[in-house]
Length: 149
Image 1 (cartoon, rainbow, N blue to C red):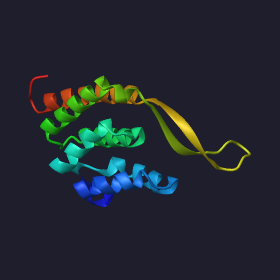
Image 2 (cartoon, one colour; image 1 turned 180 degrees about the horizontal axis):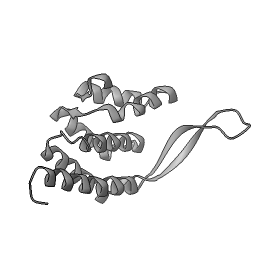
Image 3 (cartoon, rainbow, N blue to C red; image 1 turned 60 degrees about the vertical axis):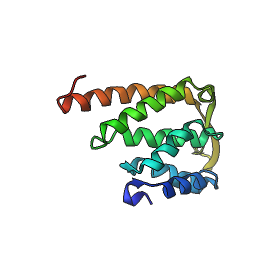
């Protein structure tokens, strides 16, 4: 699906299913996030709503996807601004104060490779970092187009 570089409503549904599957399927889905460059309006709305999903893993993954989309210099500036607004709203939501954990490979020297659960920090902290970075990206894009900063 990521080969099309476009996120549709069906793609979001498939992504949600993948994030509830076994590690290898989750990992493959997560590895595709940086490939998306555009999004349907209906899929965008679901991604924004999913920032408050019961599953912090899915909310975090949707935020990563929105962050990736917002970094696309060809993305409509209005969509980028909506992503910034969605991150701002999500930070204020108590659900963003949840811990993010991911399953990852851990291979220490002279040991077998094993799956481990890694703590990535609070969801709110990730949103704040992405929001800060995107605010700068939005300003640069606006300045590059000759708009007001």
